[in-house]
Length: 67
Image 1 (cartoon, rainbow, N blue to C red):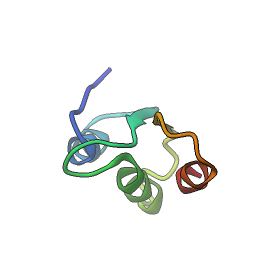
Image 2: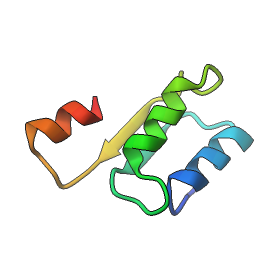
Image 3: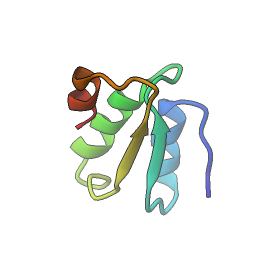
Image 4: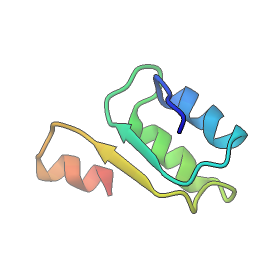
């Protein structure tokens, strides 16, 4: 299990380790969870990794953005 403080660190870990699942807060420093997720899913090498985004927001707009 690895731990990152922000989205940029998460991407570095994903590219350097055999990661099977990412659980991330939406609001992190340097790179938010939504942007990090877009980076993961748009890269052919990492697009298979499931990403779970956590947030306290419960609006429909926030849910759609997460999807």
